[in-house]
Amino acid sequence: MLPRVGGEQRVVARAPGRVNLIGEHTDYNDGLCLAFAIEQGVTVTAELRDGDEVVAEALDVGEHDRFPLADPAPVSGWRAFVRGAVAELRAAGHPVPAAALTMTGDVPRGSGLSSSAALEVALTLALLGLAGVREPDRLALAKLCSRVENDWVGAQTGLLDQISSLFGREGHALRLDVAALSIEPVPLDLGDWSLVTVDSGASHDLAEGGYNERRAECRAACEALGIASLREARAEDVARLPAPLDRRVRHVLTENARVEETVAALAAEDLDATGRLLDGSHASLRDDYEASVPEVEAAVERMKAAGAAGARMVGGGFGGHVLALLPPGVAPPEDALAVAPGPGARLLD
Image (tube, rainbow, N blue to C red; front, top):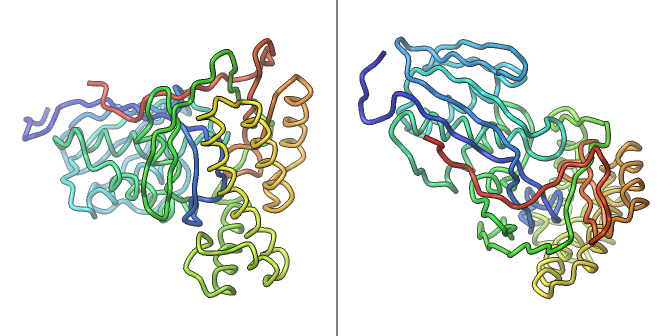
C-alpha cells in the first residue's frame, strides 16, 4: 500500500440524486429551478493503489474498467463518468492519485432522478478526499461535474442536478437562479401531504434522446432573438418566432414564473396551489416543450386518478419517473417511491 502523503488511504463518498419539484428545462436557459436532494443516491469507495492507473468496478452491473491516470481515453456508458471525473479533476489542477474505485447506488437509473449527477459528484468527492481535499469549493465542483456530463458523456445538461446533489439541505428545497448562480433554501414542510415518484416504464437516455435537440432549439431561439439566453426573452418575443421555437420559449418563460409561484405557495403553506402548479408544469412540458411520451402520460393520469393534487414528468423528460403530490389520506400506489428533501453530498469516512 502506498504511504499517505497529505491524503487518505481510503475514502467513502455519498452523493444523492434529486427531485426537481418545478422548473424543468430552465437551468440551461439561465432560468429558475426548485429542486431538492433525496435519500437515494450513489456511494463511491476510493482506495489508494500502486502504479499509475485507475481501476473501477460498478458493483450494480458487475463490470470493470482500467485506464491510465494520465490519459483516460473517451468511452461510453458508466465508464465515461469515471474517466471524465479523473480527467477533469486533473485538468483543474487537482493531484488525483492512482486509485481503486467501487461504485454502487440505489437511485433508479434512467428515471429522471439524476443518477448521473449523483455518480459524478460521488466520484469527484471521493477522488478529492483521497488527495486530501475534504471540503472543496462546491460551486466549482458542480461546474466541473457538468463538464464531465457535457464533454465526456455527451448529455448537454445544465447545473441543476449537480448543484442539487452538492448543496442539498434536509427539509428544504433549493431555489436556484442559474443566471446569478444564487442558491436559496426554501422550507419544504409537507405536513401530512407526501411527494412520491412512479416509474413510467419508459427509460430515457439524455445523450441519445430529445434532450440535446431541445437544447439546440433553445440556442436557435436565442440566435433568432439576438439574446444570450432565454432568461432575457420576453412574452412578446414568442410571436416573433417560428414553430416550434415559439413553443419552446413560451415553456421556459411560463416555467420560470411557476417556480416563483411555487415558492410563494410553499411559504403560504398552500399545497393545493402547489399541486395545480405541478399540473401546469406538466401541461407545458407536454404541449409546448413536447418532452413527453405515452408512458409518461399514462403514469400522470394514473396518479391523478389515484387522488394526486398534482403530477408531472420529472427530469429531462422523454421517459423516466413522474412526480406526484398526494394530499392527506391518499395512499401511494405500491410501486411508488417516497421522496423527501435530504442532505447533500458528503464524505462518510
